[in-house]
Length: 463
Image (cartoon, rainbow, N blue to C red):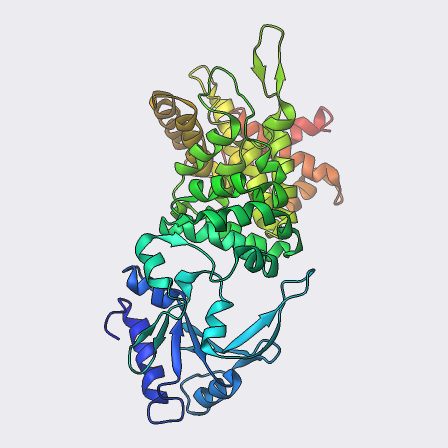
């Protein structure tokens, strides 16, 4: 098993092989799916190991637990004939070979024990059907298509794709994800079936759609995957707000429509920047669809598109079961995404401090988004404006002495100074002191002058 490039994965596979050698399982266990495919493609192995056998998955999982190969009891799913165990750092899923049948309104199948051949036919794509004997290393291509499809870089289903996608519509998203990630083509019949069956995605839970959508967005070739989602009609079914950006023309400052511009912006944000930043790049102009106006002379405007877009993005992400924290963070970044880009040298220090205050911990993120947005909008990239902004920002930050723009006095200190009970006026007083820092009348952390200003403001009727 030395061909597995991950030392941990090789060790885990060897442990599984050694633990079952000399038992009734020897020669009857097969690695299947991505781990076999990726080895042939010379790609790093995934973190999961799938094993199939003609037999009882739960019994094998219990055996591996009993001999202490797995440290925690297995999780079994009798309805589906599967069991899961953790071996070292890997999740091992054990499947009893089975055939499946589906009802029209559900992607949860009824199952019954079957042969290895039946089992590979129920799988999503031919490239995931290779079986590798855990003990001998022999590779079986029971469909007769897996080796050639991997060689020719083709995504196709083992059975009629209309049947495959009707049974489990989530596989349409998986087809696109694999094609984008591996750089494969989806074969013509399979592609036509995806386009024809796209409406079936509506029976899939938002959580499962989100899982595949995230994997597509976080891939290096996310734009290719997103284009396939749009062209197939799938995107319109679960994220119509995104699909609606296609063909929406922009003003003279942009080369592309809103959709293409958003994809170009996404390309400038590497996956290492994280999911929130990738989502923000993709959705930053989603509000332009609803806010587009055109003057009589033909000038195009998108007034308040950042505010409208923030609302649309938050609603979309929550509908797709992203966490509230993720949805709200993306919405905040979208609502602020024009601030850095609107900078010019006439800005006062107060304007710079106000941006620093409003952006908070996300200022660097907003700079990154502004740079990506600008790069996507123009034929040539002019970094002079951004360089000027960074230089000015450094100067203003130096005067702030590394401190944040917040009230130097706590709520308790304000109540004591003003002789007030807890009330909304305390929050107003803190905002007043923050604004004094923004205006340059108060240094961050200066409690003495802060109190003087506050008492003076109270004398004049602080509201």
